[in-house]
Image 1: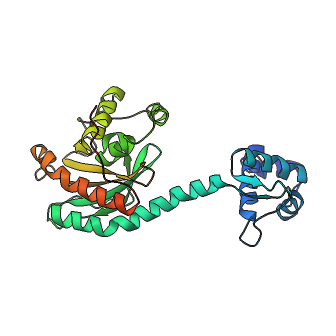
Image 2: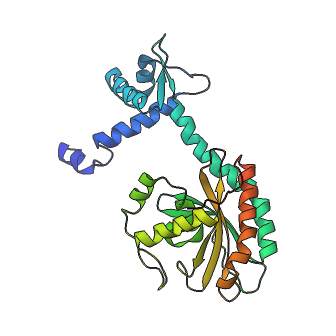
Image 3: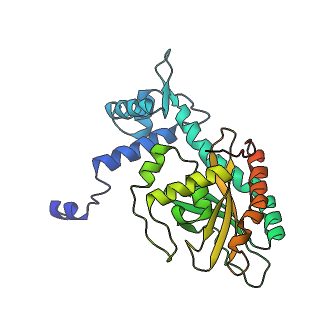
Length: 272
């Protein structure tokens, strides 16, 4: 094979210095184990098959971000507390999915509507659970489905728990109309979020899917952060807008019970 052929067949993404550095950094973190909790530059370079200077540069960057820490006495590195924080976020999702399952089944049976559990994934919500109603006329189960956060009741609950800087980033991205009732205006969405904070639940009136209404409430962790949302959803012929305030307490109670299992406290009304 001539030199020209080698050049043509090369993968430009794989050869990208930035991608190569990211990949090496990931491999560096994965080098640590329970048996090798602390490793020095020389050992890391040997295992990764790269130059010591490369390992030193990557280790310094990871150290600055808290992904690595350094033993002051030996100079060796070990995994940083930032990784624990990231892992806790993953664990929280797994925990809330497990802890909520029985309570969602009870909510589904008592409401005769779909009972759903959702978490925020960037600009969208992901339904970790969606237990279908036993009614003949019911919504199709959408477990694992991804929907826009700004027009779903569960999504609005999750957005109400974001800090202002996170909301600013959220509103930078475009929002499109999914139905003729979808609200995309930033100020109107912000008003919805304030209302959720006051009364403890969110409603959805065909903003995401025509013919569908939903009532949702936030789930809190031990730090008081909203980590998920529970909701009931069904066809508009059964879930009347006039019934929102009557049905909401049942949804809030389920959210509170799940929150307590996650170490959180019951929701307290905020008057603003």
